[in-house]
Length: 114
Image (tube, rainbow, N blue to C red; front, top):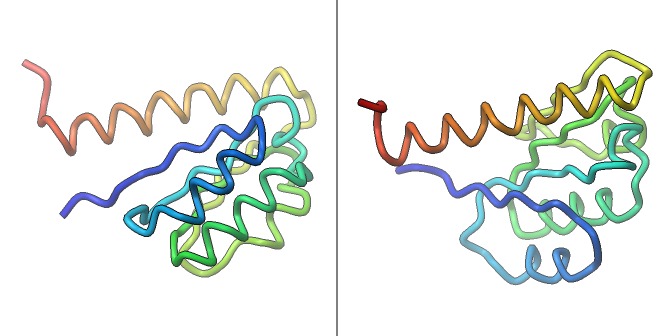
């Protein structure tokens, strides 16, 4: 069975309520461009707690050590931390990682491209 991935890009608390009510989600992606790079976005940290409340695992994309998000992660979570201080470099790597995750999900769902 393919695990469901919930790619929450969190502009507001609306994503948080959706995360809390959808028990079919097994993964939640914690990422918010512009503030998640430092790992201290209150919105994203709240979403991580909400994901844990429903038993979902979290994939956290951070930079420069992971900030407060690193301390919220639990055993089954994944932390992809870009070891750089430049926001531009961190965002470039995050974009590549997101494309790779989408490609992997497509492969799992639809098989190899012909």
